[in-house]
Length: 266
Ligand SMILES: Nc1ncnc2c1ncn2[C@@H]1O[C@H](COP(=O)(O)OP(=O)(O)OP(=O)(O)O)[C@@H](O)[C@H]1O
Ligand SMILES: [Mg+2]
Image (cartoon, rainbow, N blue to C red):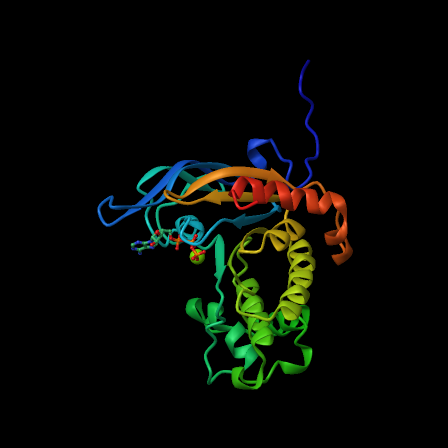
């Protein structure tokens, strides 16, 4: 039988053309080999998918994101983004961390314009896009506010708008809401799902929370420590859009138990 071309859903892509990030036995050591941060990680990330990374502290989650961003050099294996080997920092990815790292003396919109300013003088068009993005993240009334006038959650919203302003189609989010209270985090997670679907970005999202990892993702990359290994890529079958109530269903909890089992903390 000949395989017919078909439209592939995010998270289930098997066609090479749909793979945005591919790792083949990626490894990273520090200190001349003394610390193995990541060992032999092989994975395919389909275009437009949302992949959560879970695993205990020190298992190499941030290391993997930094390798994909080209901020550090891998020690072994191959790693491609859009089919090209990563050999240094590149513009296909944007990163976001636990802390927003906004410039205190700049308004929200001026912070969002920063990535543009690195390349050129922002145009009126850049400016209106920045304002649009601030609206998208729910900060319509805070465009001209300074970071000190914003809550922690609002500052992370600005950081998300700034990330989208770069135009990167791959978002690397390293515990972006990890420093926020649970209520704020849950709200931002819902909005993040809506926003990445809207812009069609491929997203890698690091979290320590297994429920959160599953709720958001098409696939959960489960990592184990010493040395950091990719234990399993777990498919999350739930339809979108997803509502918070999903987390109360037996099917959801069964998947949480499965991931917990893999992590060995069940
Ligand atoms: N620049 C570095 N120099 C030396 N060792 C490093 C460096 N960066 C990371 N490591 C080591 O690599 C391992 C993986 O670190 P990494 O930061 O990727 O873990 P993580 O999974 O992100 O942890 P956490 O959940 O605590 O953020 C750890 O043992 C860490 O000490
Ligand atoms: Mg980390």
